[in-house]
Length: 177
Image (cartoon, rainbow, N blue to C red):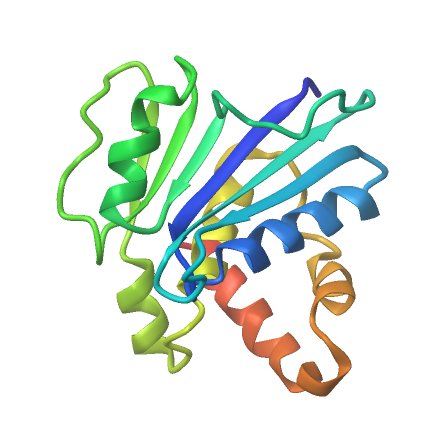
């Protein structure tokens, strides 16, 4: 495996940082070298948020992902801002419920997942982030789905332990989409 830079971006409150943290813990569980760097605007909920995750077989020198190999855009401003930064041959995952336009580039693989609508239909309206994470795991092969429940256990606080299975179901829904 080479070094893979991932950028997950959206509005605060969409679970961007949480999705990145889940991915980072899964990489850690698999013995990978990694970096997790959250970034959010002063408004937090409703402001801009993004999370850089680097997963590698070798030590990570810098936590900054300027040109992601994988971009997950949870809103239109994020797609507008980061689409052109994605490396040629990269992958872009789009929440097509909230983003009506298509990826304009032809040198990347684009995936359109109606994650927000799927989350509502499945009865967990706040877990579009986990649906997108599931699809990213399937299509990118950066980490495996096996053992994801254990990685979630590291990230979900004990007071919200009842959310572990719901999050896992959302990841599986995205993985199987």
